[in-house]
Every structure is written in C-alpha cells, then in structure tokens.
Length: 404
Image 1 (cartoon, rainbow, N blue to C red):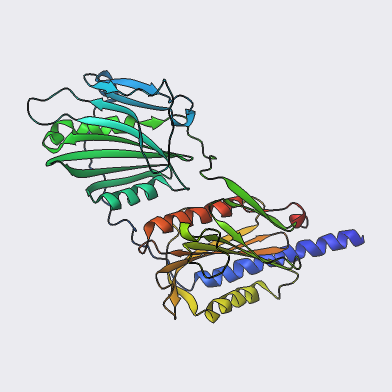
Image 2 (image 1 turned 30 degrees about the vertical axis):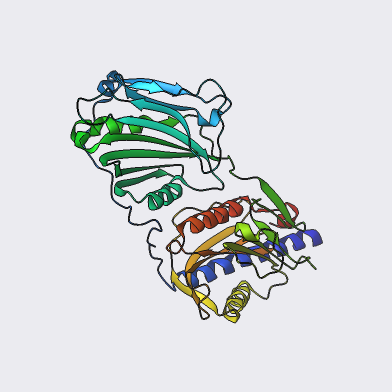
C-alpha cells in the first residue's frame, strides 16, 4: 500500500510539473509575436519561372535515362534524363572516386551539339564533402552570396533539396543557369544546366524538366556529417555532439543541478582553455531536479536574472523556421528565439535560442548563442544546425524517467 501511495505521489508531481510548464509557456507566448527574419544570404525569395511543361511521355521520348554510381560511393548514386542528341563524358562508375571538403569533384558532364553561332549548352554533376551539417538551402544561399550572380528564382523542396535559377556572366557570355542541390549525409551534390541566354526561350522547358529528373537514389535520413562524441550528465542524461565542438564543464557535485557548455571555437583558438578565446557559437546546458527547484517559474526567472547580470536581455523575437525534433522520452519541449539586447554592445548582433524540456523529474534548459543570420549567415547556419542536432540526440537515461 505504501508503494502504491509513493507511486501515486510521484505521478501527481509529474502531472503538476507538466501543468506548470504549460501555464508558464502560455504566459510567455502572449508576450510577443514572432516575426520573419531576413535571409542572411540576400533576397532570394523570387519564385522559380513557371511555364507549361512537356507531357511526360514526350519528354522521355526526347531524352535518355542515365544511372551512375561512383565506385565505392553508394550514397552518390544518381539518375538523370539528358537529351538524346547530347554527348556524355567523365563516367565515374569505374575507377576510384573520392571527395574532399570544399573541393568539387566532377561526376558527369554533358554537351549539346555544336551551334553555328554561340557556345554549346552544357550540364555538369559534381560533388563535395561537407565539413559540418547544413541544409541544402543553407549551403546554396552561402554559395550564391559568395558568387554574386543575379538570382531569378529560388525554391526549397526539402531540407535536403533546393533549386535556383540565375543569370551568370562568363567570359563575356551570359548564361541562364538552373541548379539543383541535394544533400545526403556528408555528401553534397550539385546538378547544373547552363544554356546561352539567347537560347532561353527555345530551351527553357527542356532545362526545367531535365533538372527535375535529377535524383540521388540512396537517400538516408540518419547519416551524420561529423564524427560524434558523447558526454554523460552523471546517470541522468547523455549528450552526443559533433567532434568539432569543445565541451566545457566543472565537476558535478550532485544530481540536483548540472551544467555544461559546447563551444564552437575559431580554428586558431581550438583547444584554448584560458577562457579568453573568441568563440563562434556556444550552447549552454543546465539540468535541474524538480525536487531541488522551488518551481519552474522561479527557475526561469533565475535564468533571466543571470542574463541581466551579464547585461543581456531578450530583444525582438525571431522565427525558428524548421521543426526541432527531440527524444521521445521528453514529456514537453518548447523553443523560442530572440535577438539579444546587450548593454555592453558585445553581442548586439547575436541571437539567443532558448529551449525548455521536461523528462521524469528533471527540467532541461538548453541555450544557443550565435551570430545572427544577418551578421554571419554561414556561422548562423552551422550553429543552428548543430543546436538542432544535439537537441535531437540528447537522451534522458531510463533511470531518470523511471517515475514517469
């Protein structure tokens, strides 16, 4: 009977905790409306050019299906339909094929027949390794910003596929270029169809349908880009994080409060333990026992007071555009993002992403500090994708949720 009473007591506590979480989050949600932030790479919100396409049977009758798999690289296997009168070079189905970060390796090239005047149309399929996790959209926006070409259309199909239409000036010749980017784990593949601008009206439909036909055939959602490391919050939770980030913590004195930080150091400061090194991004973790906390609301106020002591406060809300997944054992998860108001003007161009989670008898506070998307889109992309990844892989231990 005593055991039943104790079990009922624990479950009532969990229920009260969840109700408290919901009430506090409801009050916070009424304090402001989130707004859309400008894209860090520029204005690429133009819709793709729209026109009537050929019937599928007619398109297939005019094209040839090519399926290729670079030897030893099954995650790069692709298919594409190309015009029958075009020539193909650089098959990668035989011989060794390897990828390196930041360097494209060509997998296939296609050429139209020679023209009486003007250059040929051509296609290229190329691949490279990613250094760290990025969506197709994030990589493409960074690429376009660096290249500086004129964008005529942009479309995001999914986290792993994006498409752009742009005008490119090359050696005095203008080209209409349609590109598709696909990400598969650490592999990034670009398929690109380039035609002289004067042939646009005659060839635009073929260009669109050929690019639509490009696909990676062995897509996998669970492929990781970086080597991962693990860190245990005693026997309460396990954190898995990319090896390019450093873990910082002081020895835990009890299971009531545990804190740690992941730090993204610039290359020149890797391994610095002085505490004075510049950082490109930071993720703070604080796990608090519900038994040790006065209340959830008190913990939130204590957290905000800690920000104020450093001269920081929440500024304008910004939108978290993508869904953030968490482990199934979390009973509750809430995410918010804001501009940072900094009295000392050190982090005035930063964003703060806050998360509140609940599992068993513990509250989890996880906070990302990152340059804003307008300030440094490349760093913002890397930091926010890492935040999403570690949130997805953060796991409460079975023992810590036994009272659930």
